[in-house]
Length: 352
Image 1 (cartoon, rainbow, N blue to C red):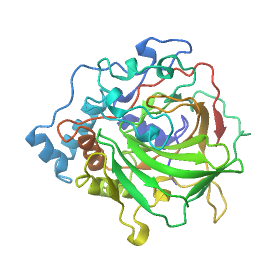
Image 2: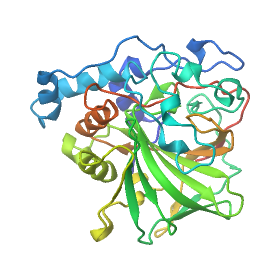
Image 3: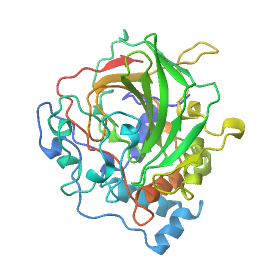
């Protein structure tokens, strides 16, 4: 069973010691707009890849310390200088043009995003509280029921700004409190946009769903970490991310490419941690935290229900670096995560 993050978990303590200090974030202060309370300080430099670093990052096993060092150095910025965009707005009405905003520390960066992004009261991402909170096991939301077994066509898209996403047609759904949501797409971030008890993970995947009845969005977030004790780095590879990275070298910015369909190599169930529901055969999933939030990119619309799974999935160090290089247009180790936003009196719903 995948380890759950909890202050009483010996596994979590072991993993926490491996997380770099650079991934710690200041706890969001309700009502504060100071940058220190909205995320990490953004340094004014990027992480460039020289030839020797690229060789070290791509060589399996022999140069693992160098690979981890590159990841730690890059995650310490919690920003990207490659103008990467988030796919959470794709397929959603009111999407802002990618060229109008970036993650860079200038006038187009996160602290300058316009409209609701600046004045909104329910913005995402946030710091998720687990260890410092009394968990009430009477959740407002039932177990999430993922109906991802039907084979459907999917397409991989390069948005042209350091972001890749897998788009789906109808056929894969998630049932939340008896309401059915269609899976629109999934995409990745590095580092994770959400934090858990002040810790950000190596990556995060967002599975974006749309209600068949109301049209509202529900996004399922899953943390990806290189710290799970699964043996060597190869064993930690995420198959869904591997498929995207394999095809990414052939993608033209803004052009759709079919995802290979034999044996359905793109299977979103492989993005979900093992369920803690005790039934032998079930498509119901928990534990997770729910909160009302927003898109994490302009226009930052506040009509999103967030369901963040408590248990992480594995990802290899090589995959993290490959995604960073993609986000950095293969010139720098790019990142595509918005700073942590103030929680402002909202409440978490726990289903543990």
